[in-house]
Length: 84
Image 1 (tube, rainbow, N blue to C red):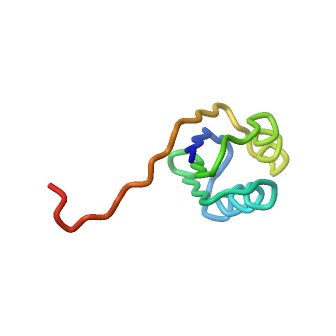
Image 2 (tube, rainbow, N blue to C red; image 1 turned 45 degrees about the vertical axis):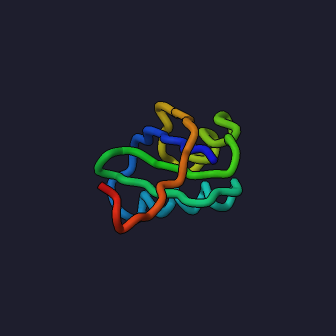
């Protein structure tokens, strides 16, 4: 599993976030996509690394601009009632 974080310019509201998320879901096999217009970020959780050029082109096609992409390994956090 990988976590991909993108800086996205141009998002101004919740609908902007939805447009970016939907475009990514349609173009790629992903587990989860969340965007924040306030932070200017989109986070993607996927089974394997995605083609960064294709990802950038997909978001750019919606009218928003990807300024940075960072990919890192993702480890699912376990749930524990007794975590200290």
